[in-house]
Amino acid sequence: MAQVDEKANDPTDKQAQAPHASVWERMEKPAKAPRTTLTHASIAAAAVEIADAEGLDAVSMRKLSGHLGVTTMALYRYVASKEELLELMLDEAYAKHGNPVVPGETWRDVMRAHAHQIRGVALRHPWTVELSARSVVNITPRVMASVERALSAFDGLGLDIDTMADAQYAVMSYVRGAIADEVGHLELLKSRQWQSRDDLREAYAPHMQWLMESGRYPVYRRYGLHALRKDDTEGRFEFGLECLLDGIAAKLGI
Image (cartoon, rainbow, N blue to C red):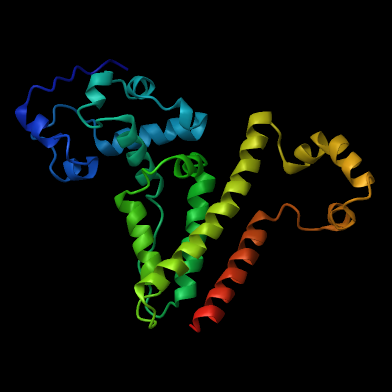
């Protein structure tokens, strides 16, 4: 694709990209008369495509500019730094997250849907787990809308705002822990080009066999030999989530 010549001589562009303004503020006040079809949305979508295929470390302004067929300087008219690009990517990853409030749904309905949607984001875009763990760029409009909806699930139940936040945080902590483990296994399969968890088990069988034959782990050995749902990751996620929601209900009397 031919390179697009972009020049940032328009003073309105410089004003729109004032250093103190976040990328979200600048998007609310775009530069006048854009000279190309390049947009924040197209930049974010392209960066997400790269990260989904090659991982977060593969994303760079240079690679992204080549992917889009523009100069690297053209990107800087829209994205001031790599951190802003990561913000746009995370917000794009949450594009399919969140449903409108349904009349009559309970706090459990909202939190259950919220948890499964967060898991869905992680499975579609595994790099979001890594990004959330190593960065603080997860303050974006769509992420905040997700948090707002989760907090609102507890509104009107007679709880103070700190307790509402603690309950929401408890659910999110469970989700993050569960999906980190699940995504980690999927990334291992991908990196080794294994087709299933059976391939993983076969690869580690000699090491595991020695541990099991030591006689030190009889209950885990029974699990390894007789468990029927080892690969039911969704069922395991649902079980843990329901236990947590039961605990919140009992603790708070809601």
